[in-house]
Image 1 (tube, helix red, strand yellow):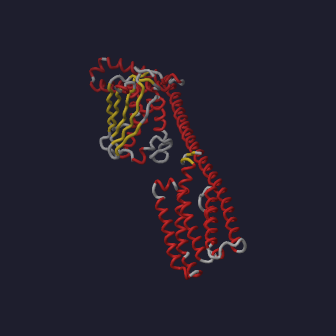
Image 2 (spheres, one colour):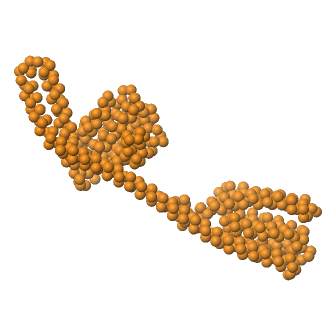
Image 3 (spheres, one colour):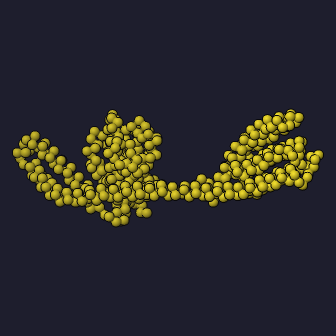
Length: 448
């Protein structure tokens, strides 16, 4: 079984490694503390038992060190079995050196077998093997003792307790192994469910942002459609009246009147341009065909600059268009992207108090393998974006503005718009110097 955290085997290996190290250090401490038992029970053997304990502790410590390299990590089960068997052999030797079957040290053999089943992540067969070898070492120790093996009394009782302990430990090992696997499976399922939930939340946030954008576009289209009928006719009448007045001899004779009429005509022409820009939203197509429509990027840029002019007062906007800018896509959506990028740049520079604020917009058709894409960059000389924020600017609802000044959906929606055109919107910045957004659009001369 595999999951987000890796296969069960790799997770179990790491689990065994951690517990084996902890168990080995615990065993070292208990082995060395056992010198107190030697002093109380068998003072005549204290020196040799102390040396045996130190030697066994050194073996365990060496095994722990071996687990710190890749070979040891791969063979953690075998190494754990070895360090568990070392104290058993030491205790069996002590039993043979002291009272044989009557030695109380047989309890230490029980302790190690039971601990392996309760505390250590052993497999069933490993635990049964440890129990079998432990009993064999006890039998050999009693057999080599001068009193020999008596199939009654202490030897029989201790043998039964060792067998009982081995069986109980094996049962605990079996169920512990099942519990570990079930726990791992639950964690893997939880991780997968969390990943699915995160993906669903991202999709919902994107859908919500798109719906908000569509609602705004629809509202703007409805408003624009009404304005076209209400504004176009008066504007045309005013333009006709201004043209007639300009040709009047009395107006020509007065420099002030001529200048005022020229300003009035320029203002009315600006109104005509704004009305023309709003037509893009008023009569926008609502089917998939608008992604294959052809339009001049230069025209879309002019519309965006005019529509956002109230936010860019005092900001120099420099445009550099290289080559053919005829592209395919949703003109209204691209205008929305440009409006968002330009207004964000202007707001950041105004908030920071940038001296001589400027926005450079460059559009250039690619060459070679990228010849079918128009590359567009919008760069400002504002305060830049902090590194910890740069990777999150396209996240839905992420914003550094104050509460009530934005939902944090503009760049997320812009990213989706560019993505639907087969491109990518990328952010780059140098804190304190500049911020640049780059995206690409399909050129009309290269149909997909």
